[in-house]
Image 1 (tube, one colour):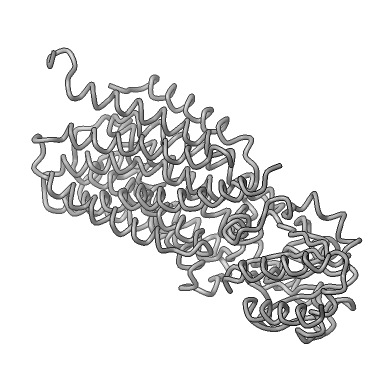
Image 2 (image 1 turned 120 degrees about the vertical axis):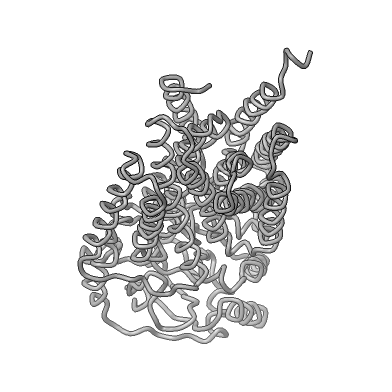
Length: 464
Length: 98
């Protein structure tokens, strides 16, 4: 019996089962009804593969304590941070975990390349490419994390930046060739190769504006998958090849879908045309913002027939989603028809705002996406904009000079009255002026979204 | 065991699978799904474990340990946040009814 079914065969079989569970899990995750079971199936696959690998290593390795210790450290840290993170901060946590995966793939490449193991040229090339992609994904994701977390607030842009990035890319490729060709198999070339690959991830991501980060994170997610697939080939590990490639393909598709939702091409996002044109488009908005008191706004809303609420990231930052739902319920009790309009890129990622509203308990039938709701703004008495900016900027329809020209927007400017809850008079997250804010029918309610909505609730109560 | 053309076949089939599996996803699930696929490439943990197990010098062990820590972070963190998000979705869906 032991000679027929070896531990290695059992390990390989468990990898096969794990790969099947990953694919089935992802399939189930693409429908809300089966989604939770989907991630659990994938989780079982992951557990199975990890335990099988541990069993396979068994007594054969000297580093078993190190392996278990490292799993414990990484696992516990990620478990605690993952349980604690607020729903609002989800995008940057995904970026962080994704970067870790890329780093792990790069580390595998590092062990293989530094170790000087006997490898065919094919394996060397694949290990190097995987290491390159993993390193870029690692450092790039960390920058994306730092930007969304607010650790880096400026988008670094300067003349000739593209040429510098191109130069870094070329140097990295040249070093990669040196590593592969064995011209210099020693430490310097390999180390420099990794340094430049990491540098490229940083340099590529720094100029990209915060609003584009979701697309970039999604791209890095796909890249990490690819890197994992490549390193899986090097290690002869079918589970890694399959899971990595599936994620690479699925991630690429998701990236395209997200870019499409913003009406941008991927190249346009990556090569920071956004920043260059915003300087030109910024001067286009003239006129002044008109303020309103919460009490007046509350009266206006209490006597409206139809109100469309447009939540944006500012709402999430202020953790105001529960309060907003409270306000909506109050208005519904007053006989007002209330709808929520969600832009595809509301929040920090497509679907992020739906997560946040679901957290607050807003029922789905009150939430509409762009295509469903846009015709209804004309019949709305009030469009209440809470912490949203670019997604309601009419410049995207009308002003060719605007950097967001062509992006589909919510037509909040067609509503009879527009109330905008905003922290201050400044520009939004993307640094673009908003023509909506200076329209005749627009009134600004300045303040933190949480506080402002509380005041509105009081005002509506007083009015009714 | 896996080599050359066979590996290319696996790559090709897996790529089509990934594309097909995701192709009809509603926008509301984009964020959880990105998170879910992020979790799935946490399988890199297994590779990092194998690489560390074979490491026979201190520098290699250091790189290997970093790899395993990062891989474990990817797998565990990816799972935790994906499950948290998706749990909320189901409850919201059930409350509503069509």
